[in-house]
Amino acid sequence: MGAMDWPGVILAALAASGVLALAFGQARTGWLYAAVPLNLLSALMLGHALARIGPEKLAAKPQLFFMQSGGLALAFVIPALWLTQLRDGAPRQRTVIDSLAFLAAYLVMGFVFWLRA
Image 1 (cartoon, helix red, strand yellow):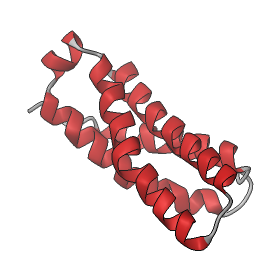
Image 2 (image 1 turned 135 degrees about the horizontal axis):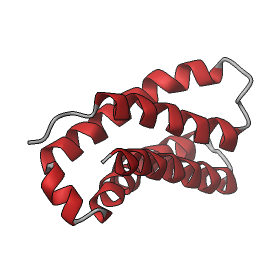
Image 3 (image 1 turned 180 degrees about the vertical axis):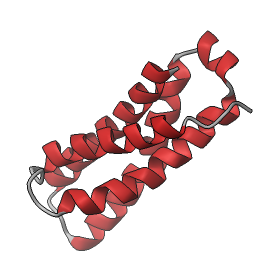
């Protein structure tokens, strides 16, 4: 197991929060202050997963940064989003847009970790 990239965790959380703020048009409200700590938890999980993979394997297979980050979004975040929004009766178009925003945010997290590798 490699060392945890703590600065990468913080930068990834900030970057993901920025993507979501832009996607949801909430950059000037208090929403961003709530998003950062929640994205910090996600970035922490991603950073842990990448540390478990190890720097040697990540250097040999850089696509793992994006497979891990996108996989978290596709396997956990987006299905939870769909279940919640379907239950609440949200329009399908909004759910698709929100899903794409979260996928982009998670891929940006992977990109941040990749840049720091």
